[in-house]
Length: 376
Image (cartoon, rainbow, N blue to C red; front, top):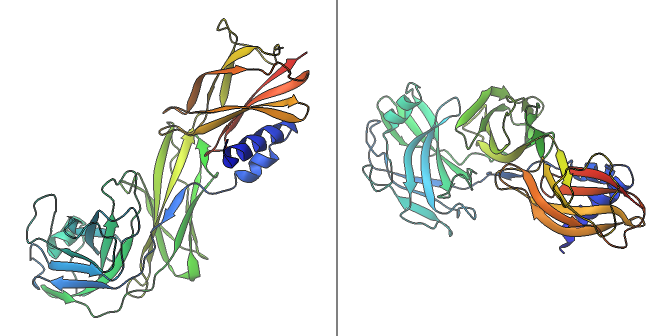
């Protein structure tokens, strides 16, 4: 048995045995799983031409740093418009992959094909309905994994271009100062379906700007950009009506995009059913509240309220089995609906007389579900 599992079971079982959930509550204050995408490095852009209408503006892009682990399959190149949105200029550049060593370099094809899309700067602005105006614009070079669902982060390096009239050129402006945004959710770890929750982004160093919250790997925009006040921006998204695990993103756009870089962070957040448990005897009859069970008796446990989708490990114990000590049982796992079904539990033959609880604890959500029974 791993130390992690032992700690989880003992925390849940002993805490409940003492009539409190203090140990679990303490463990449950951690944020949901999240990953940062802050990067810093020097971007080098090689122009193919200087017209805004050139079908493929860059001949080559490079960064003086390697892409982060798990994000080395491809590069994407985008222009950033004044409101902070990205518009794609070149996607799925794989000529130098895997991009594991510095410098990272990719040739950009002159035309779309072989899985790569290229666009003119004029087209990129038009697709996000922003008029082209004279000025300096950030160019994002983003490292990507081929599986965006499993690896949704957005490690990004920033360069610049200057636009004047109908032409553009690579800017000599130095790389922007990296910023850091951290995304958390409340309640931590999970929330029951239909219940409210809050996303909070914290921006380091007091850099002014706004945060755009998004869901489902950026497919769903959550509300309007939220101004950062005292380093914090929060939003209460619409409640979720189905059990699920969703990916949320906080995109921080500094007010001064030429001096400071954007930053992103993703967070995986779980929506669970209300906890419920059914314990049945050998004949399949559901037991009522606080039944009396016999030492050595086998019952079948079914429960809901754990992590759905890819599920989670669920630890199982019976409290006060040996005095104040619990009896530990093999762990199980929740299914895609967040349920545990047909778990056969045989009580110890030498279980102490008294009141006990069957305790199931989800290792990721820290959901604890209990069933009370007695023995003589």
